[in-house]
Amino acid sequence: MANETNIFAALIAHCKEYGYIFQSSEIYDGLAAVYDYGQNGAQLKKNIRDEWWKSMTQLNDNIVGIDAAIFMHPTTWKASGHVDNFSDPMIDNKDSNKRYRVDHLIEGFAEEQKAMGNEQLANDTITAMDALLAANDYAGLKKLIEDNKIKCALSKTSNWTEVREFNLMFSTQIGSVAEESETIYLRPETAQGIFVNFLNVQKTGRMKIPFGIAQTGKAFRNEIVARQFIFRMREFEQMEMQFFVRPGSQMQWYEYWKTERKKWLESMGLPAGKLRYHNHVKLAHYADAALDIEFEFPFGWKELEGIHSRTDFDLKQHQEHSKKKIQYFDNDIDESTGKAYGNYTPFVVETSVGLDRLFLTIMSLAYVEEKWTKEDGAEDSRVVLKIPTKIAPTKLAILPLLKKDNLPEIAKELMDECKQSFHCFYEEKDAIGKRYRRMDAIGTPFCVTIDHQTKEDGTVTIRYRDTMTQERVKMSEVKGLVLGKIG
Ligand code: GAP
Image (cartoon, rainbow, N blue to C red; front, side, top):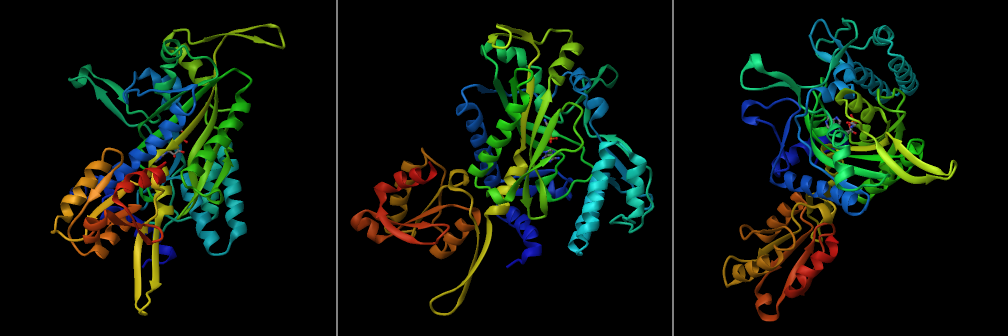
């Protein structure tokens, strides 16, 4: 059993052992900050993505979904500001040549101080850092690092370079011959695919403001400090929604989505006490207000989702760079003037959550190590993933008690009946207790055992993952029972 301090390491090991997450290209010693999802991980990720998609595009009649390409015309990134502004202040240690994001280096120091009981110093350092970042004062940031004698984790020295900006976008070439090729970028956010399609969707869908366009998909960032497992990756997936509103109404919608998104995260099983808002001090180049919804990860409070009021920056930029008019004609009457609102560039409120980060929150809440004393006095234990039933990768395990006496055939009949409606797993090997433990470890909420009594009265034993309690129910009622719990 892992203790508090190594529970996160235990979760990472568990993800690998039970087919949730593998290091990318592991046989070649892996690729830093890139991960593959295994058979259970891919299904869980899909279930989370489906819930988000449904909540956006099915439950809101004014939000539609699209699927834009990863590659976009290179001018997109010039227009969006990413070529010039999508960079982070970095600092290198001259002895180890290790590069750090300045804010991560200082935050790491503050966390260490907090752990040592120096809460005041930790808070003062973060306050000073926020002010320096907001002012783009790189000399001041370097001085803050030096004054606090912050050291490189590798060389253990404070021999630092100047603070410099590094662009986070990956680039590649399009075209078959290098000389003919043009540099294009792997998108660092999915949002731009929505902006460049604003008119296509608005016109073909006859969308009326306010309306939203949602999208899920891969994004790529050359993160310098990639750590904490799937928290910060170089290739990751975003679930973003751009909500187009009348100029002047953006703050009202910003408040609306701030509340709605926190409610949705809670509906995914995240406790309210582990979520909080964090207002941005340094606003991105496109925003007039922004906040993070933070989650209390096993390694501290960190950003899970961003809510950004992006003004009309992106649409105006694309209009200027493409020389195509990107406007909306609003024929509703403005009560203050008695006239139609007319033509304008809509303002945008964005909600942007990392699918991998949400996956990590769900796994860190689900992972539980339990220990108890049995009736005969012996100790027992298990590791269980208490993943919410509606998103668990496998809903039902169907287990014939023995591999004979027609029990497998009856079990397969149940499998055939249920697999049309939800994901089932069939297993006939090993003692039943061992099979239950394996299902606990991958987070299967229900196990059904078919035994000799099934042949006599058509009943089976259903076992519940979270309580380990069992009851006998009619086999014909199993499908309905599971469907009821999923709903
Ligand atoms: N379109 C706005 C945008 O991209 P962001 O705050 O940079 O905003 C949004 O990213 C979300 O994407 C974050 O809240 C986080 O959940 C996720 N995210 C960002 N960078 C990530 C990374 N390197 N690895 C995993 N998830 C990341």
